[in-house]
Length: 346
Image (cartoon, rainbow, N blue to C red; front, side):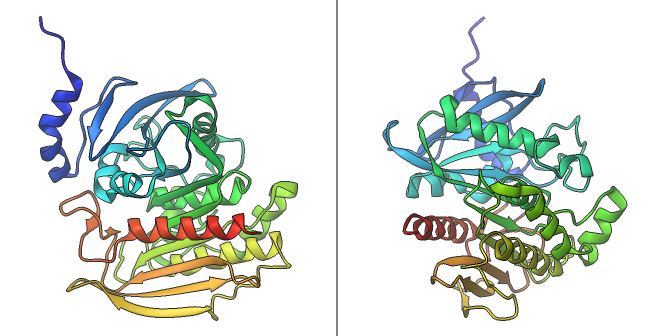
């Protein structure tokens, strides 16, 4: 029997997979596939005795010895790593701008809907549960497992919906690992502590985001540092209410004021800059930015008019995407690059 050519099989089915925005073909661990101008590998990572899969995408055209940033991308419910990559078109952005990507994947045995368990206390602390697993994957890539060289000062985390909520947790409990965070249609750290509270938080926001931010700072101890944050949310999101975007920002600003009181003094009611825009005939949006006392960008909010629970500017027909919105992928990378540049000039 002729051996299966996994790369050919994936390529021949890719258009159908991405149009459906659904379950991609599963490739054996370590098999690289063509995707845009680059490639990705499906990797198996063993963390605390559990195997977790992730897709790794090195930027096209970058020499292995060149140190590049790394962005950890966390998918939402019902998605997986491949459908999330296709929906956001983040691989193509990585090839344009020269950064690496890792997409950890939730196991359906851990959550039947493919959601990260952001709403359970056992997954809300450093060194435990899913945050520890994701951090371990990132650290392994920063070491010897990466297909290239990772700039350890420029490691970022971003996520959509449940992935956005998990990204908020990671930024809160691993401030020493992540240089900045992007939360698209997500929720604040510890906005819920059980399934019922999760639906309440999604509908009207969680309780005490500021107090939970203070607790996160206290738990970080000597590892505490200011972590810049960008929040993207739709004004018509009926799955995760827009109030959650304010809660994420309030919490992030609280943590950063405590971690860096000499420089961070952002107030959500007083943005440094505000602007409105519209891309072509698409959705209008409002952008607010907050600088610290040095003039460095620390926080940004991109609120998209009429956007529901979807990745703004994502691929047409993708999983949870709305191509009519401004390009969240470019906005997030621009924010990461800007804040990293500001930090390197300290």
